[in-house]
Image (cartoon, rainbow, N blue to C red; front, side, top):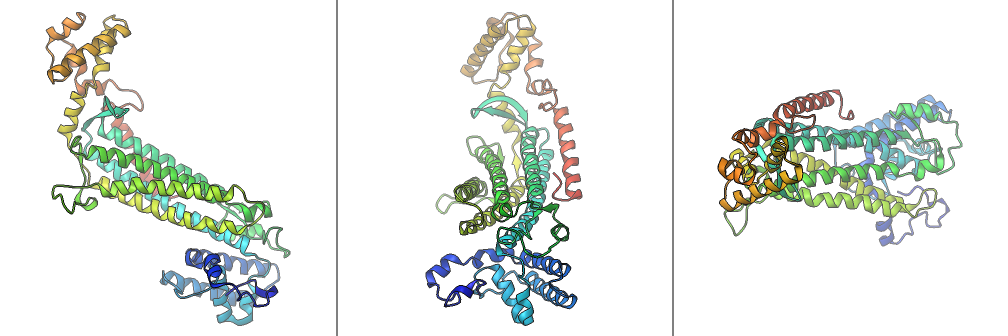
Amino acid sequence: MTLWGGAFEGGGDARAPLFRRFNDSLRFDRALLAQDITGSIAWATALHRAGVLDHDECGRLTASLEDLGCSVAADPHFAPDAEDEDVHSLVERLLVERLGPLGKKLHTGRSRNDQVSTDLRLWCREQIDTRIGEIRALQASIIGGAERHRHAILPGYTHLQRAQPVLFAHWCLAYVEMLDRDAARLADARARLNLCPLGAAALAGTAYPIDREQLARDLGFDGITPNSLDAVSDRDFVLETLSTLATVGVHLSRCAEDLIIYATGEFAFVTMDESVTTGSSIMPQKRNPDALELIRGKAGRVVGAWVSLATTLKGLPLAYNKDMQEDKEPLFDAMDTISMCLGIMSIVFSGLTVHEERTRQAAMLGYANATDLADYLVGKGVPFRDAHEYSGRAVRLAQSRGVAIEELSISELQAIAPEIEPDIYDRISLDAVLARRDVPGGTAPGRVHEALVGAKHRIEAAMQGGASTP
């Protein structure tokens, strides 16, 4: 069904089959069926308030739309053989089939331009709430992994070179923080998109006395879009949502990359559960981190969705243009992709095993306490630049012997720097090195414990208070 064929000799039926397939959007915008029905129910009520529909007409339209909504909710593949141009055409055709001429009254004063913007905002709002809930679930899974291995020490890295020791739980909390910001960004995007475009009509505003403020309240919006041209041509809310989803993808990809490296035979810091790994068709010994590699790969796909829409929008004049139909497929795909990635990463952390002896040994042989040796010498009155040089010599000696710094004898250390005394061993042990990072945000065990408890309480409160609360 087409809604626009009056001025065409063929009533809109003369379109070339290829163009029809090229132009029509029902194959993907049927995802907005529930939102289109919700918006139509509110519009019927608004038309009744404006005196366009009488009480009986409004009631019959509403009842039919609600019945249609129940059918859609019960069947994810509702009307699979429909050949309508788009989701709006489908809903109107079904109404006309049920109600006759009354079904044709619903579109009075409304355009598909303000209709689709409303549908898409409603859809984004629901999806954002769900994504925030999934982020919280992942954070809880990461914290669970941190608590299971709360005493594990591993080397921290800069330039992918061993730098200073950190607790595994501290590493986990870094990603909890990233995800916190992602949830806040999604909530912020939600707040900005939560304005109602209905009443903007095609571009100039409806000619009927629609109470737009009440209509917005009926649909759970915070207010109305203040400019009709902007209302129908704005896709900032999609672009911003995609941008935030891309950032989530980047964070998940970084976490995946860390774990992929840690799971290699060369590192052997962690083992992933069999539920999220695969084997090789030719090499029986392999356990491949396919789940993480796919997360890493799909992050680029979500970034591409943002680039795709930004490129589409950058040259569009006001107001609506058919190019804007290209907003939905990248958005729908990005939402689905990030949802799956968040769920998979939660499973990864739930089954992750950290090899604590291996990570501790790696921290020791990584000479991650070299800075602490230099700091010790500074405390003995040695200028830092000299202390840095002496510490470097100690590292070279330990490397040549294949031992940790703390495994060098006191005489060997004093030959490098006479200021070194036997208490050095208490100062440069891994536990001592960690304990001295006792500042807010540091990796000292007490600080990490406080941070874990705080994060756990914060996330539990957010999950109990609603997914949209960052």
